[in-house]
Length: 583
Image (cartoon, rainbow, N blue to C red):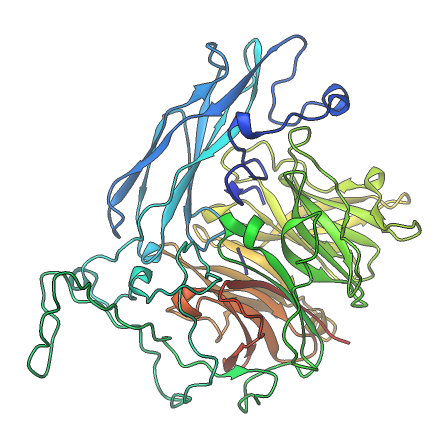
């Protein structure tokens, strides 16, 4: 997973810290240096013109009202405040609803109204909800307008509809999980520490057993069933003891001194990089990038902890020789692309060096070319590629030779034309990426042509690869090992389970056929796939951890057997974005 850049999605690390087009209140944004203010061109989305008055959206209250229950409607209302009494022309409001644990919005509404509604669905159960509101203007008028985004607080956790009404058992809401004063907390979205279940492997269930959902609390009006006389009622001053958290399926684990079960796929060597955070909103303060060595099974190393020049590191990818990592992170209050030499004591190199408010084009979702000659990434709402230069003392991207492969992602307020998550084929002759967001997000493929100067362009029509209507398909990862032995590419990706169930499931496209992976689960999300080359293994994340946090798994792509990787990193925060390098 996912994730889950992620990428044209309005998100925030923490109060006063910007991610992409998200902005803190105007008073919290430090002014750019005078040299930057005088020389920087007006960013896209700002109404340009000589001697025009600048109108800024200073924010205003955003309230969410309604009942956080499946089937009910939540209503958001924004009370805008501008820096001038003159209202900008053509104001529109973009409402994006987020479920805790999800990087991308689950619903987007573009309207001229100051209110928007969202009907709570079954996939929201046990999660908290929030809404962000981006205020935009069309560009007509005598004043130029600087768009801004404000966010609401989180709702209470969504409770399922009554069991009788739903017809099927529902998961125990996360609010009923036992709480503790553990120093680190878990994702997704929870602000409360959650007890981590033991690492000791529980007994394996019979192979024929069907996964049993977590216990369901009876409706408030129905007394809990008992086989014996009811227990004495506790004193009014003593709160009832919440039921203990039990993983829905006992998960075998691997560790430094633990063997893995027969049939479960675990790499015997190679390196794993991944990131953790409590939740996406707090990634700036809780985000950590880790390295794990499968050969030694030693505890994972938090390589990003000494860094001072970047926060929220995530979605890292190894170079083909395993010597470098490219990843996205925040510097100068903006998403940028970074390069770090594996094992070095140096700070990562900022390859894009964007800053806010001078340039609001976010840089996210980086990938290396297979030959390490280029870096592909999402710039703003479009796909970019540039040569990676190692001749200098410090590696750099040749941004003057950058190719913008798409140029339509920033003009659609609905996000339908946003392009993100590029994935090149092994010889750079074609590119997979995602067009659109939410239910409009589809995986597509574009053929590329390269001119003598080394610039790329798309030739022919962009072809849909995974484009089921009303379903978000995202996170395309090519299995280079499988591609070498097959005529067609093998593409792993994640997608919604259904248009009315926006939980994520792992899929694979091979030999022209889309297959739901046997590793996908009906009762949990599976995302962020990374295939291990020349094997039947794939690394991925799943919400099978304590409190439904994401944890990393290694699975057999044919049998569906999997194990939870006990990376010994000492955190119950969510584990996401695995990438693997084979020696």
